[in-house]
Image (cartoon, rainbow, N blue to C red):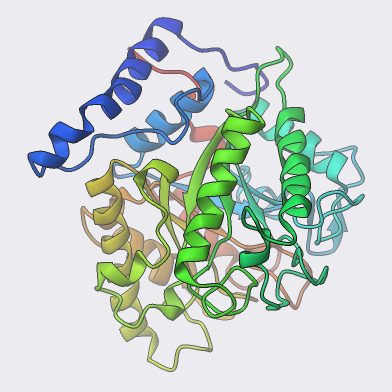
Length: 398
């Protein structure tokens, strides 16, 4: 599949459309019978390839987990992509690209994103990843729309950008730029490239302007719902799967499913139920011994899988990592051991680690880094999937 434009099977796509989009008419029946909601995509007009991506992520997640890395082909430790090559610290170490490519569109409207990557290059690298068969996911560290400062400025903003708020027009203008960016992402045949869109992540923390404290739970839900509705209904963006991702560090009991659902906007607004979990995998913020952290890590994965299964969604470890990778055996003894702990944890569809900025801030190994050999062992394990091992994620099989 590498180097080819991915095609789709119309008959199979239409069959899945019938399954996924006729079912809303039957919701009253399911609810009255107390049967879990059937699987329903957020966007009833999702492109064929986007439907296929959802279905394939659901099917591949059984005993397989896709590996991802943030901005992996844009830069790495000691290098920046000058636009003439596709490389990655991950590929340098194991010989393969990640299956999941993470990007961020914070600072949209400017020449570069908040990490200094030109937006025109992000678009090109997203297309490159898609043409090779990879899966792209986009986060959005957007500036505070009221103060104009960075995403970590917790000046109260959400109530002001909702309909009727003083900054609502400014916010819709920003969403229009997001929509334009999404529309620009097209394959060689002109079809929109499917994306996982993960806005307003870690909302149960208090460090972003959309988070708990700066915003009420009700306002956060309203913001999420408005954003989704505006993109798909007003701007006709139909190539997105929407990912919801609370932060583990603000969940007191790793086994308490209710805590994970703070700010959950409803099944009709979420395709992927994720979790950002740095806390249970060696974080210096967690004072428990690593062995105890690992128990909580496994519990957190189990909860995410159960929540997703109940709602017909895809479970994912949307962000994780250990900054500077200072723990020997971290890839196999912590991450792989947690994912591979039991038949439930093995249903996590993908995991993605954060970016490689420099030698003081990195989350994937680079040549010569102390966990390099351990990562190769992680890569070689039958449960992990990298780009060359992916099936056609944008086509439905018979």
